[in-house]
Image 1 (cartoon, rainbow, N blue to C red):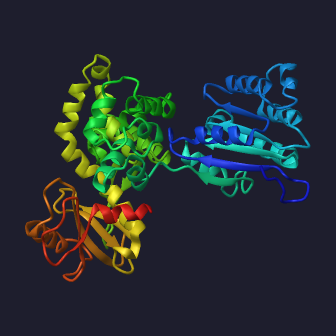
Image 2 (tube, one colour; image 1 turned 135 degrees about the vertical axis):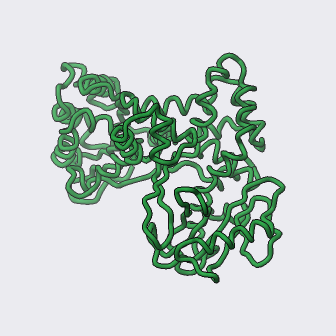
Image 3 (tube, rainbow, N blue to C red; image 1 turned 60 degrees about the vertical axis):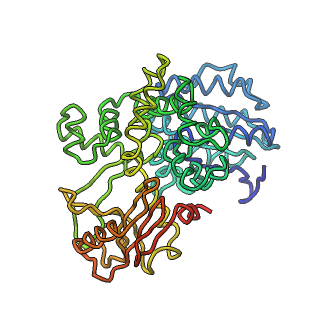
Length: 453
């Protein structure tokens, strides 16, 4: 581990964030195994401040830090000020060590003074020692805010992000063709634990049959553990999330599907879900303002789990995973057609001018309250209110059904009803099974996959 930098301040802090179950803690554990330095790895449980302080003291006392025994000689500290001061006394002053605080957002929620205590301990003692402080969190919003202007720990740590595996990673890892890799991404969300149990080269249905035969498969348990960790007390938010996961997209329909919650409760739940990056709020993209917000589950895996797996867990536990598989087969085509849209929009945005007209700075969709029209792809110079619409496109993600002249005629009609589009606005077809229509640019799954290379 390198130390250095400001004279007399060799200590460093890293803020490591990423989606829950994406492998952050495992990555740090692997790092600790390789560097073989004295360290302590504490994971907050989010019960209460007292529980976490006691857990922290016990973890330090049993750690490999050279003076860890000091913690065993004292009662559990009553504040994070005291706990971090005691930690500093247990760290070596003449050799490197590592301190890991996992699930750090729990600590910040339990104790509003935690960030201040951490800043004071880092400035006064920890930064003067050759220690690497690793702060890990799955609440992405909290982790981002920790290093923003006006917060106690501002500019004291280096931010790092652990992303899920991309469709291109999945294609390489499992030796799948591009279209099948996108299917695997929609089911797994790029979570390593799920992909580790996916047999090499296996198609979607072979994997699902394998996973749904085992109540302990990562496909089943990851969703349950994510929801339990994210919503230990917010029952209404979990209910609203479930309503969105089952396909409801508008504010009114979400409220109805959530058991008739009053609008204020729905609004608060949606604000919480969007803040935690579990739900995305999308607006139509055109040159006119719109209030037709639609909500979707941001994580593809959680969207799949809420739609199919969660409701089928009881059947899997009874040994009837075959019934769950049948329900997935019945709803797969419709579900996938909707779920693939934000993935394709991200891919096009990443590809940029390789596939998009010059000046395209945003890729979205367009809809009205009645869905007449509803357009899969809209490119523009900016969002959500564009000055110029740069493209109009359609997604046809079906096996053995290419984008044909009838699809093209429908897209031309929709272009004519899109505010800001002109008769010469370029057209784009994203088709899983090819394109037979003439006079339109076609982008294949193979080309989309290049967005992540």
